[in-house]
Length: 403
Image (cartoon, rainbow, N blue to C red; front, side, top):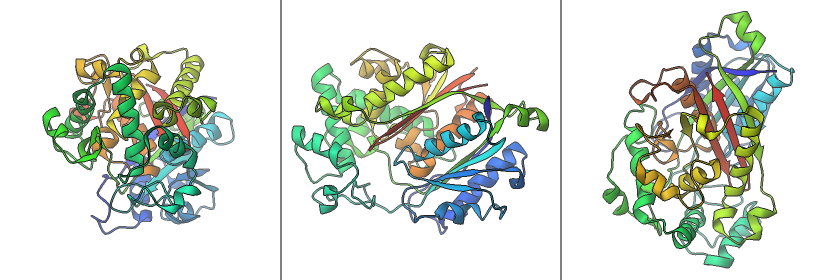
């Protein structure tokens, strides 16, 4: 059965502790906005998958209770940085499988200040030597990095992606300026997004001169920790017809989730261990299922947790050949006036990255773009959108949307 997004909502993404609110407050704001966008009452919702990483078990129920006490099933979802898109995928599966006609996917995060660590508790910290890495779910990933690059005292996620950047530079001649061009583009895009955590514009030179995090990555090429929530209401075709939601409906044409295979670890490369093979596999599955290709896509929201990951994703999605991503962003092909507009929202780097909400915020941005409701950041004539959300550990979700 076909499935459609008919309502989306999100809060402004903000620096942790900058606003006096609880996670259930932000979830209520985003969920209520999605329901209002569709003109659907919460009492019509049949199931609610809720994504988050840093709150306690059943926090999903606590958040959803702010929308109503209807007794419907609530599922608590945690899939690292791909949590939001995992909740969306569950919602789509409930609808596509004929189990439900109306499902609300909700994601939120209330985070700590500071660099995102990789310890077993998932907390924000920067100590690479922390003992919790020995039992961390991503210990195998970091072991690959350590074997090839060592383990330094910079934030661990920045290390593994920074080392992927070093490999790409050594292998393909990618330059620091090309990496910085990703940050410059996404910060420029976020200037038109009132929901973005940052709305300042920077030049490539300013990004290169920013505080070093893990060479070659500087602060302005790294996604921040963030508080925020996002939601999407997913319904069946008969629900769309019954309630006259054709103008709001954006079809989920195809969607795929992949996890790590032997390919992620066998090469010893950080490029592979951070998820490029997963992304390529998910993209292939989506293209095959939909009969569409990247050449049919107008607008892309992808997981630029660090500038290098945007470049790796260009290649994994088939937007350019192997090793050509630096030249692609440098050419202007991924911004307004180019072949695609990538991360018109500002992406994770500038919009922010509250883990549980990120994938659903991507869906919200694409829904607004495909409905022509994105205001000053509108991509002209956008009809097909692609979302890419990835988490170490690992999970990659690729979603193709069409109006």
